[in-house]
Image (cartoon, rainbow, N blue to C red; front, side, top):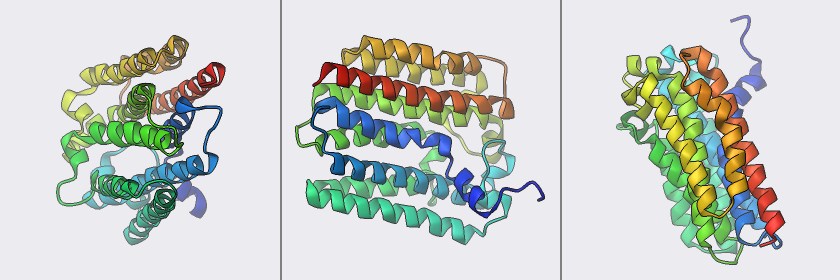
Length: 290
């Protein structure tokens, strides 16, 4: 493969950089929503390490499991290590568990500083990350991926970060958990809408594959609406307005006639929108001062 990425770049591409905002935005929002003037910076940094490591570990785990099952043979999305056959599956498997280990180490350190109850939460997050496409009955193959993303990259990441600030969890934090999780789900749909045809051929029944390309656009839009609901319920109408503007290009693409590789742009739009809305939320928190 003369056009194959280099040894380091292939690992970076397989970590799926455009999906990483799903890990960092809820941490940033969770840190700022409770007391933006007194953020526990070290605890927040540990939350970011845990979330980012879990995201990368899950991406590598998906690469390994999908590649071993042959699911990625029909894919048109980002580079895959296992399916490309440029990297031995065992090395991808080891990389996934290396990052799960980083997440576990950061989580234990955070738990020692705050509450040991977080150990149980972290253990379920690691299990959920692996079993998304791994194990004998991967739940991502049966249309439950959105539930995992909403729970762990929405409520758990946002509320967990808010909790370790030491000031309690406000009702606004719950609404921001919904908003952050819905943004992560929109990012997931950007991937799954692109892969509808390949997933169906491979027997991977994601929610988008079950609904089909056309109705899947409504699913993407539904998560965008949930972002607006979360921001409005948290009394941040300007952030909701920013979300409308930021997600408009993606919604237009979702309802277009594009399929397969032509939908790659939807992932870029969704990733950018998540960063823009997250930044707008932080500005709003700073302006309120509490």
